[in-house]
Length: 112
Length: 246
Image (cartoon, rainbow over all chains, first blue to last red; front, side, top):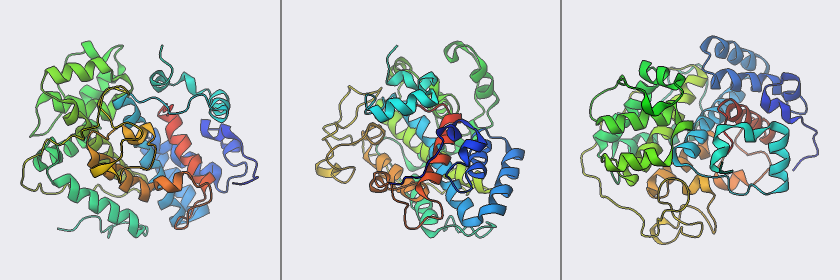
């Protein structure tokens, strides 16, 4: 665990928030975003930017994580699984801050 | 032939990533519980076809994907129900419903076969997407190995969560004792009707992200150049763009 202060809005695409308490946070966030949006030109720019500030080992590790999470939404939605512990206070706090219940895949957890 | 040498990569690729990808390629080429090796490789090809399929792109814009006629751009070796299933898992998964999965059973795609198909599709996607992320060409698909599927499904797999049979939380016992510990998270249980799909899932995830044990440990992993906060920022942003609640 850590006492480092972070800003969760980095997950929602705010570059300044992504940089709060996370080394190379803005570059990592941009790399993840352009990758997930399948914007090849922007991905090349973001990849080069991350490479220039953080080096190739960071790029390779970040690429692995990003690739892995292309899978998660497809597992959840193709099988229709709910989130395991939707009533935890931490989970509710994160959901509220990031407005996660607006996502279509929340339907598996909160039946409509 | 050996795969995933990454000789043309401009970057050094961690050996555990290359080994996990190569091991999965071996499994991909082998017969599974419900599909032959040739069919499994054909499923992998459909993952690639789906990403450039014009029908998928058009259908994704439609108000409902269930009354939208057309034909996928596809390869050989699978029937149209299986082709459509792969393409939906890859390009329009948020609109998959329980009734669609059950309609497919009537059309010949059993739930066991669907679980294996979905497990393969997302594993292949994860490997291919790593290549796209670092900007290197996709690995050539493996040559299929001979043999027939064995039709195995764990005796404890049952309906109740999601659209398909799964092992219960405390059901990783006997031949499935290695799948998880005392209690399995739903994302682990999802493919448990096809235990090797869970094993492949964990093998790739351990290299690309974190091991199951590592997920519960918020210290930074030993063999990574990014710490846990950096890992979760990348994971979180990709998931947010994908509108992944899970």
